[in-house]
Image (cartoon, rainbow, N blue to C red; front, side, top):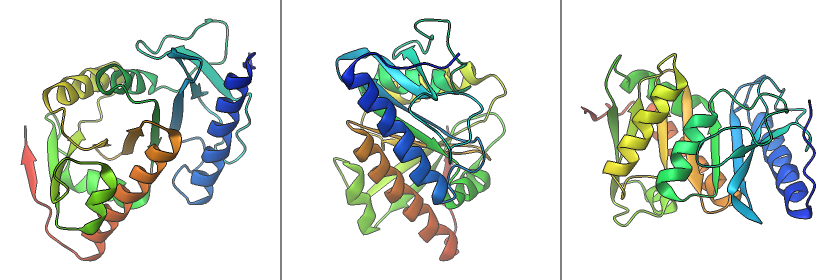
Length: 220
């Protein structure tokens, strides 16, 4: 059952999600039905809209979203289309960071780095340092950061628990994370900021890949 936001703020948010989804699809970062985007409602930040599961991201409309509890990921109301399978990861980010928008895509260079740095059963991290683009992440120390790489458990709630634990323990970490063999998730105070941070992290991963720099990977 399609969801149609009833308020002006909800309609605007849904349209923003649809617009940015098509943009990222056209870049090749959300092929087919992959990826998911969410944003807290401006008039009720305890609720969020997230892209519905199984939707072609190149044809997403403002009706292809689901309203969820921003902190739990549960659909509100429950009689809607199914939200993205990774909604619980978005909720974990919202709970811990206070972000207002989250983007998850399968951009190629970040996915390659996530593949190379991944471990089967522990959280790893990739050191990013020296590149000027680090300044685009809003870090307290923009000279370096350790980008976490999480195991891609079949149980998404397990990934969400890992993400919440890591973000709680490292409050000054980067506004992004990698999922092993899967892709990248970023967040920000606005959808635009989350997108900008995504672009910076994808570009940083691209520099690592094309320079053939050996990845500096640490294990949790």
